[in-house]
Length: 424
Image (cartoon, rainbow, N blue to C red; front, side, top):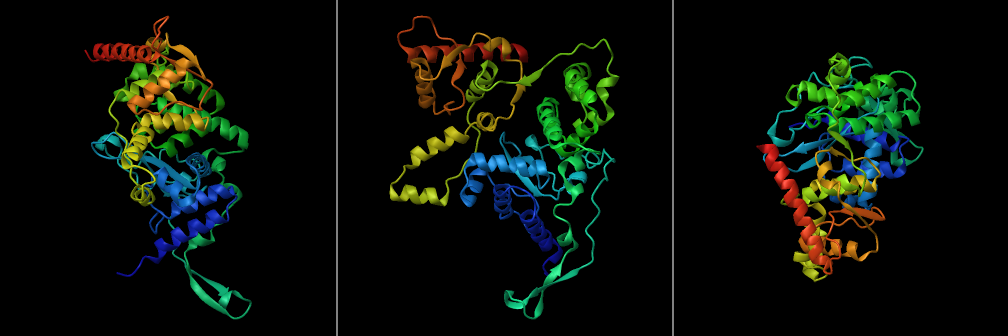
């Protein structure tokens, strides 16, 4: 079969557009590393962060930071890809051009967690304002000439260029601000509005089945007052309409559905931002750790060589990987905390964590909680804050290890009873 030169040139043009972009050098390195895992069309790929760390030589925190920069700038689209019958997800990455693909329909929409089907195609097309779907690539070919041998001598034809290759890499209209919201918008305003969206979006009932791109575009199309009203009234709307009747997030935003809600409906806040190492954050974290680990991980070729040489043991490596990746929610909470990004969660645990006690760094009590995590193979909270909140222990306890075990079991029993009552 003859190769698809148009597809190959799309991947080529994306890599070269990234190289000529105004992105920070580290961001460009991360995107070039990600490009190694993409197919010829720049389509979907699912590399774990650990693999990007290995290929780029950068640490995990840097990789996550610059993937976020690239996503916000419009050079990649990041979605979560769920696998049927499993609870964990992996990020899906697709190459994008700022100002062109951000206004079009996302390609290769993956099946969501639990085996559900992808959102219908009209969801990304809800918002016609701003140019709509990107036009198909021009069929015209352009011949690129380059000096033979790299010098200033005779010219030779290198290859035929797809029209995508001559797209301006840094056109003034290609900024994520211009793509997301018509009119002028300063960089600081964009960051503020985008942060508000990232806090609001996870509170929507079916946000994991809604298009992040379409919802963000609808969010930026609102005025400041409309966004404030949306944040304030969304909990009451969900309570009034019922979760099962909630439509896609982009449709809700475009229709400004909260304005059609009866005045008699009272706002009920069901979700909120949990402060890192605070009562709700720690309670949510401990509740997740009570479940069996569901995260997946692999042993790399380099690690196999270390095991063979006796530098590390397979048992110790597996224990470490289970601790760091076994509970995806806990890993995500720690990643967000290190990146100073908000973690939004349900407020149902608030009554059960109200008595949590503050434990400061360097105290014997914190050491006892650390030993408990080590015994159970759990990731601890070292380095996040100077203080943490844990279930209260009995006054005057002599054996702190026994006291923290008892406090943890009491908390587990308390929330288990609540869950049983809710199910009944």
